[in-house]
Amino acid sequence: MYSLRKYYDSFQFYYFFYKRESIEQYMYITRNTHISSIPEYIQERYKNKIEIIKQTTEYLNMTFEMLDPSVEEKMEVINEDFRWRISYVFEKDIYFIDEFKNDIIDADGNIRVYDEDLFLTVKYHATKFMAVYDEAIATAQMLIETIKNGNYSDGVKKLADAYMHESRVSFTIKEPYITAHFGYALYHPPLLFKFHAIIGKDTQVFDCEINESEVLINPDGTFQYNAIVYAEENYDVLKEITIRFYDVEVEEVNICC
Image (cartoon, rainbow, N blue to C red; front, side, top):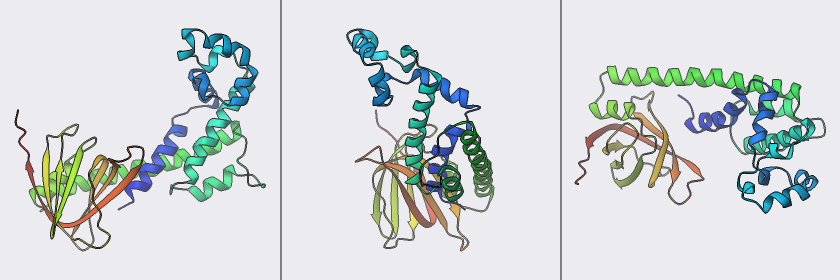
C-alpha cells in the first residue's frame, strides 16, 4: 500500500509547519527557547546580561524572552530553527521533496530567508502532505476492517488490529517460522505471534521497541507486516522491519507474579 517509513518521516517533518497558523505564532514559540539553544552570535550580544543571570538559579530556566529580544532577533532564531529542520528533510525520503527543494532554495543554492512568503510556501506543502496522510490513514483503517471482517485466520485479524506502540519485542527465527514475543503495549497484554514466514536473504529481524506497525495484504494473497522500530542499541535511530508471511498464530502470554 505505501512505505510506512516514508509516511513517518514525512509526517515528522511536515506536521510542525502544518500546525502553525501564522509566522507570528512561530515567533511566539521562540519566547520559550532556552538561552543555550539560541545562536551563539545572538548570545554574544547579550553576553553581560547572560553572565549575570548565570550566577543565579534563574539560568536553569532562562528563556530567550528574558533577554527582551527584538522582532528581528526572533526572526533570526526562527531562521536558524528552520535551517535545522531543513537539514533533517534533506537526509530523508519524504513526499514532495523535489518540489519542496525548488521552492526553498534560491538561485545560488542557498536556503531562502524564512519570511511571510516562505512561511506560506512551506505551509502549502505541509497542507498538501497532510491531505495525503489523512487519506492513507483512512485507507489503512479500511484495510484493518477488511481483514477483521474477512475470511482470514484469527491470528492475522489479531495482528492487524493490534496497536503495538511502545511494546518491546524479541524475535526468534527457526525456518519456516519467525516467532515474535511482544511485551506490554498501550492497549494489549503480552502476545506471542508465530509467523508462517517467507524467509529470504533480505529478511532481518532484531530485538527492538515498536513505534508504528501495519499489516498489508499482498496481491498474491500473502501478507506483510511492516514496523517502524527503535533498535535497542540506539533509541535515537529508527529502523524498519518487514516480514512476509502466509499466516500467523497468536496467543496471550501469561505473566507470573
